[in-house]
Image (cartoon, rainbow, N blue to C red; front, top):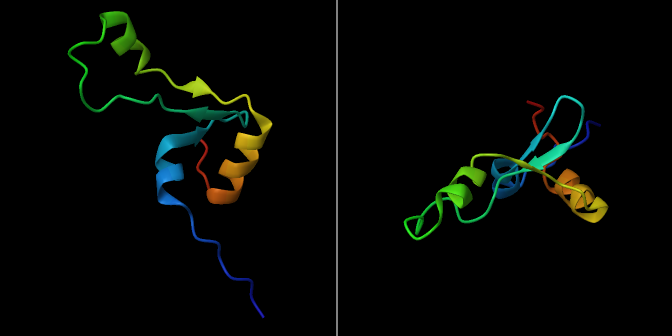
Length: 71
């Protein structure tokens, strides 16, 4: 009997990426709207991905998105 596939949590798969070395990277919050009042420096920081440090969060993301793509 074959194992069943685990469904990926789509919101998690859109927010996180795995690097080639296996680091978990996340996007910044607040990118989509109300950006006129933010400074140019703050807006520039939205473009870069942040590395996830917390072990508990890494474990949770792995559980929610087991087939996360490496990029």
